[in-house]
Image 1 (cartoon, rainbow over the protein chains, first blue to last red):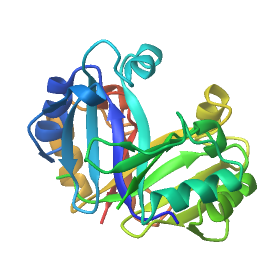
Image 2: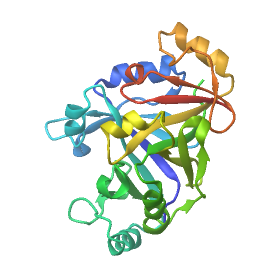
Image 3: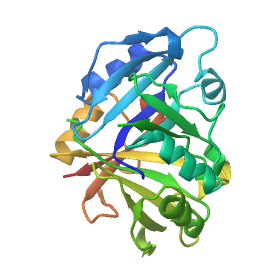
Length: 134
Length: 134
């Protein structure tokens, strides 16, 4: 079921400073910031060739990464996103195996415009897993 | 400087349970456990096509992931490893830019038999970064 790693999401408190560190200090290729108000984040992609690193800064009052940054004020690794061929089949298989899907269990449209689901980190050893239809 | 994402390392308290979750629940291809006593971990690789997920369980008295698991008993995302063409040139460039290299600043032989360095997570927004000579 688990396909390629689509991205690693890192929550950061200051996107401009993070962009400077990745672009100037680490010499990486970094995109311009994109505000995604409907997802509560501003995002920048770091292209590392085989996958993407997403730097996420909270946007608006109800950002889904606000609680994480309150607990980890310097930032940190927020989630891993894997691609799946069929997100509904993946969901049903995961639920049958006892894994908990966050929210109401139905895929939402993710930041890339594709259906996504999140799995409970307690079922995967503290790692928040996003599944994205490929 | 920053090349492809070689792996994402996840620290887990119980490798057998984590292998079962990745193999059976997530349907991923998982290798047999490898004990690496000189690195203080037992490791399993989850092959996701474009990169690897490494599941790490502490091995021995002085495991480098023991403190992380004491703080995060369920486990969690431990570090990201990027490939670089020339690790000494990368180190010198990073130090010149003010980034802190952990330890004595000299590359060590990593779990894949190649020279590696770790960068201070405080310089990269809470993410521990490993660089591996490709």
